[in-house]
Image (cartoon, rainbow, N blue to C red; front, side, top):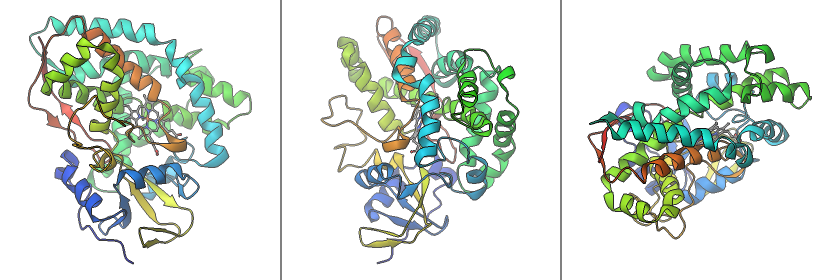
Length: 386
Ligand code: HEM
């Protein structure tokens, strides 16, 4: 059987601004569809997406997770773009800085910064949520922990460009290649002397000295700390504020019972799904729902579509902290599950914790949607506390 064909540009400006309708078409058409404009398959149903993410021997990342061969070639030394033992070795190095225990040690710094942010914004008549609220912890604390001695703003521009470059070679990707390349070239010039002692970047050079990874890999691992760490968390945090502003009953619920903070963070990431999707390459031929996929086929695995699958999440657009099974694929699943998950959750949790005693009401205005080949969410959001 041939796959159902969905003749849509998954990366058109209006689809990037709001992918829900296209994602629903992909889910409704079948477990796997063919996107002729991108010459790749796509999966959007929760169970199929999760199964693919768990089966990394079949749905491989080692030939890249972008929708174009150039980015796949440039990113080949990263953790994201690796399989098997190579992946395990690289991931182990990152986990030393990003594992739950390591991250617990930065909680006091994050909490202090979160208190300062909430205190300052509570005094303002209005603020812009992306810059003034959601970007503060990633840009101050996280950028410093990486230790490459580059300002967070520059990292943010590089990271956003890298996510554009993960799409197909369309106008957006072409315009961003220069900046994405800057991050790549910057990482290639890094050395143990150019990074802050004791920083995350220093830890990858330690791993190189210990023979765990090559120098080339060590430099690419710094990209793993920079590229996926900033925009993702900023988008999730902005959406969380937007959702709480639009559903005051949920904010009341969280304030009355702060043990719900973690549930609010997880549910906000489900609805936000900052990473729309990545691709995989099939290691061998395979059949999904009667559709034959040849070896080497590219398949877009759509986290954003899976997280709104109504067969898994009843009333999927609802911000609901009482879901019986709230686990989702916003941070991926299986061997490539986000290594930054503990940090991202902690950043979001500390902001809510800081808000609870001071913020009774969150008022939000009209959001400006982000358009990016790989990321989705809000680019600007006027907001007010109280
Ligand atoms: C809310 C915030 C975040 C979201 C939604 C998010 C999303 C994701 C997703 C969906 C994946 C899976 C990729 C795949 O299966 O191919 C992933 C992997 C990854 N993330 Fe995150 N991420 C976030 C924060 C972070 C942070 C803060 C860091 C680093 C400090 C980070 C570093 C990584 C890395 C290195 C990988 C690759 C892991 C591997 O291949 O084993 N992420 N992330």
